[in-house]
Length: 79
Image (cartoon, rainbow, N blue to C red):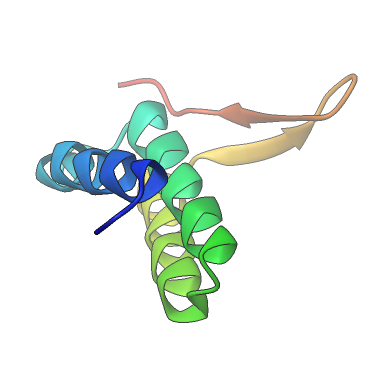
C-alpha cells in the first residue's frame, strides 16, 4: 500500500506529464518537487530523471537563472 506522499506524487505525475510539451515555470517547479520526492524515497534514478527534465526544459526555453537578493531567480523568456 502506497503512503500518502506516494499517492500525492502519483497524482502530480499524472497532472504534469501532459504539460511537458508546453514548458512553463509551473511545470519546472512541479518536476523539481517530484525530483525532491524521489530523493526522499531513496530512488536516485528518479531524482536524476526529473532533474534532467528540468534542465532540458530550461535549456530548450532559454530561461536564465540570475542571482538576485536574497537568492536566485528565473528569467523566463517572453513569448
